[in-house]
Amino acid sequence: MTEIFKAAIQRGASDVHIKSGDIVRARIHGALVPLTQQRLKHEQVRALALKLMPHERDRERIDEITDYDCSWGLPGLGRFRVNILRQRGTLMIVMRVIPIEIPNFHDLNLPSALEAISERERGLVLVTGVTGSGKSSTMAAMVQHINQTRQKHIVTLENPIEFLHRDQKSSITQRDIGTDTESFRDGLRAALRQDPDVILIGEMRDTETIDIALKAAETGHLVISTVHTQNAVQTLSRLIAVFEPREQEMTRIRLAETLQGVISQRLLPRADQPGRIVACEVMVVTGTIRDCIRDPERVEEIPELIEEGREHYGSQSFDQHLMELVKAGRVDFEVGKAAATSPSDFDLEMNVFGESPSGGGAGEGGGMSHHFSGS
Image (spheres, rainbow, N blue to C red):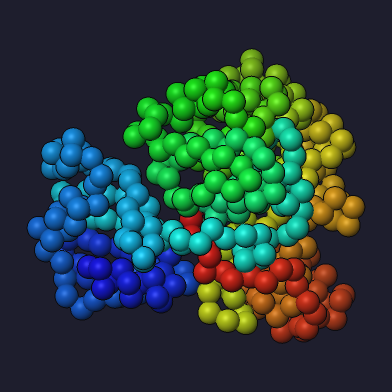
């Protein structure tokens, strides 16, 4: 299996799928491709699962496990985020590749506005997108930026721990849910007593976690977390909808006061080289946007404010970033058009600029998309 993992990493795989009765497959540049010809027996998958599980108590109940998360490292090769599951009564393992090198904003082709957002003293920063759109990599780059530039205490709550950060200017405390603390909720409550400056929360799913995260942001901490939403406006609606109707008005006011930025991303196939590249919407929260968050009637003004704030605040809409990527020849015109929020407006705008689908121009950052690993 070591050879198979090595081959997968060398070919730039983001995930490896290992299933009883099937060949080993890997997701390479978005497509699921075969890595072996031989089908695996149930006993082989079970033996590998036992090897990947870090705790004896979990190994003892392997035959009862239906869903299990952990991380696993292969010295000199890399680390994996591991999900062990049961399907049709047999075991399957899905392994997400985590690069050893922590990516920076330039590697990930992320706009420079993220540096400024990472440098905020307090407030809530959200990274959003579907599973596998590179949220973990973006958050790791934010932590890395703070670590290299400021003297802070950063507490991360992750399930499982993905990128391993080394203390540089900052001190970083990484806590694994299930091993180092019971749950996101408990870990977050405890984090407030651990003298943190920055708290990274792997995910915010329930009202209590969101409530404590907002409290942390209100009391002078920078809180970075993820939500599975596609854009800034959807993120606001989702966070407010989690609360009881009688609490929603208050939640809206709290979000208006604490939110600093929302980065929503999608990964698209590249046109200029193998791999994928990120297209992202960046909402930098301004005074006007705070007013719009407070007033449900004005929420629909936010997309326009994001576009207008590009020059002054570094914010950008998906379509603005897509146009830039198409003009730079990094993404095909058709791919950009299909991914656009409004394909007809995108088409019209590109025609106005007289841009041919291949385009010339220069884009933002360097962009080694294989760095994008996580959800």
